[in-house]
View (spheres, protein in one colour):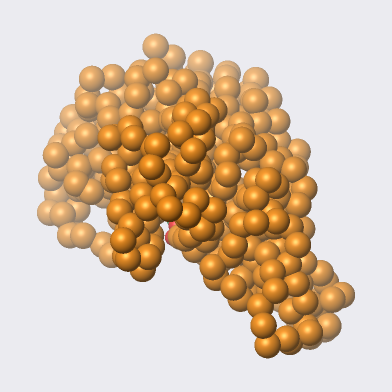
Length: 398
Ligand SMILES: *Cc1c(COP(=O)(O)O)cnc(C)c1O
């Protein structure tokens, strides 16, 4: 087992170590929640200030043309595309993951008329599963089937996450995609918990969605992305037929005519200030070797699992290749345990009913951080520090 000095030596040799300086991290905090809200990139604060003061403040409405606001959904999409194995003109950014999932599922259903089944995993992130249920209700005679049934021959579409938000378990995208498509259904991947944590390749999928505020560090409420495979660009329909997906939004025609290419999946006015932070975050990613991110992620999660040992029951797969950049453990009193831990500067989060979740963002988490987090966790457990009644009261966001 590595001691703290050995961890410091690994940090000194880490090829990604310079990236930590790109982020603002509070003193005395080990932040293991980058899988929920990524840390603030230094350049994001400056970029947002520029957008607000220089662009909005001086250019006013001219910013739509002069500062390129109008094209942000596509320019940000092109910049993000390499992170998910996509090419230029295949990704549109805007709205939220939930909305993008709705657009993808509805488009898929329209591309497979006569197939009245939407397959989803009840263990999907709830918003994804709720959206599938809501769409099926709207369509009337559609059903939502559990992915575990393994039957796709009459399904229109299958919606899954590459990495499970609760357990961190990772699915094999190429083989699942091939199996679904061979059955004649379309495949939608949610890559919220894999993008920015590992090499992601959705290029064989029909659609993919994901958020930018987790490992990508674009900030609270940052816009989401939607990948549409080029083979569907001419035929897929955006059911949220807002004006920014129109062929000529500024012709103000009375009838809807979809734009060419992935732009037809734009909906409405982009959130310009949020895009500024996203652009700054993506400037960091332009320089990041993703294979090194994955290698370090595997090393960090493995180290944490080893250090915690049998003090807690592991929920995540024990085999590092089968998990994302997160480690989850069971504890019947998981909520107060996490509150006690946060009180001591180690930030993870809690997922009901009894899961402690720790995310490892390799750009700003090091080996010594992992050692410190594990040491503090073991102390909270050994000394039962979590029994303090302060930690029992639930906060609104866990
Ligand atoms: C975080 C997350 C979301 C969040 O969706 P929002 O629309 O941004 O609230 C959706 N799906 C998955 C798998 C997630 O992890």
